[in-house]
Image (cartoon, rainbow, N blue to C red; front, side, top):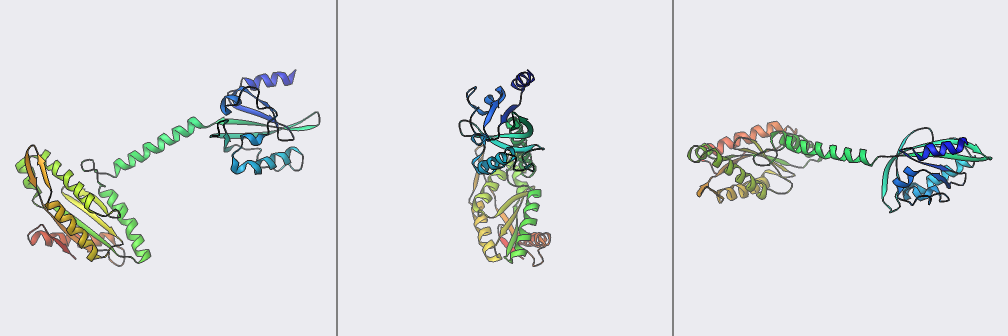
Length: 301
């Protein structure tokens, strides 16, 4: 009678449960187990527990369970604690679960083991949603909302990482600062909406003309930061000139008013000690010289 009542209790449980005999065969599965695994009601008894195990652990766990139930040892890791695991659905997909196994002792001189399978699909879905939300927040925190380029903070993070790599590998790295010439005139003559349109257009040009490995960021106002990893100053100048010429050839059509601008660029090599901030100061000084010499040009430290 006690066994019948216990099985009724298990049948009503929310968590999936099975009972396994000494031959690693399933002797009982509750309703929640059938709902979880996708098997038809009453079809699991007689099947080996291996049926529900992932291929990567099937043989190992089957051996451990069999040895334990056969009485060859009582030190299996299967028991006594919850484990994050996966079981195989009838359709072949893997279901994330938390496994809790227990020794049920002997009945009619045969050893039995019980196991609960706690469905983790909802928890995993929530974790994935939270991870995706965190990634979105990270992207927002590290991007410029107007141009969708990286912002100053993101550039600083990349600069630290790339400078450390350059110092470790001994490869060169160049740093650049680009500034739109006479940008205040655009705002004064056409309005700030036009200025925003120009910033977006120039940002797109910088991004398209830079190489895939380069970093382009808006670091403030009409100023853009450039990182050229594994690049000496000569090659960085070639890329900077390509960018400068492409900007000069760009016409922004704002409310039927064509607007053209130019940029000045300052370049500097990453110092041998890897101090990227010092490199930025040198690039800024080179940018100042480009402005002083008439703008729409590239100068280097």
